[in-house]
Length: 295
Image (cartoon, rainbow, N blue to C red; front, side, top):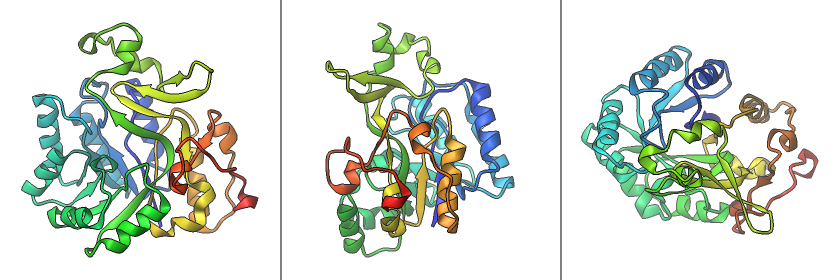
């Protein structure tokens, strides 16, 4: 089992982003996903910056994958995708347009979670197009995943979204801009002010969702840590970057993989709480205690 650092879903200032990835060069991850996956208006890092980071991570011995946007909205978005697809590094296709481009370039790709694969026949089709790995839909249960893997006939690796706030949906409308009474095209890049998105609460005061530009996330952090004994079904575990403590989370998972006793404190690393109901085929907002002694 290997660790993957997922694409950065938030909009951070340029220096914060570069500092984050400079630190990640030394983390015990096998694969690093780079690129803007959420919104084409986010330009703190340009395409050439992502390419330089890819070269640096490759030199550090990491496997690099460029993530495509889940919602391609403009000719500029498509042009950037084609530029990334023309490099030596594979794509994570989060849109069928990205699948088409990868197939045209005859290069292997990773089928992202937003392709929404729910059966073995679709997984086989993606493998025929060149997919070498896939990330199941984020709401898929352990039993649902097992059924898809039993049904497929082709060879393809599985990567689980193991820890991070779940990216649940995308919209052409920017929720962050609307929150500040701004239009999408004049958003003033307000996402920069919220390193982990904005929490949405119910009228009763319960944390419900998290808005991140055009993306809607879970308010709490999803983690499969309590179900370690079930994760051997996958070849990769994905850790999604967050504003703080990502390094500690990565090292806890790496220690667990290596058979060492992990130093974990998820309660302080994710004070908004931990959820994992989807894995149990229950409402995603449900959770299981994260005590290692209970596993």
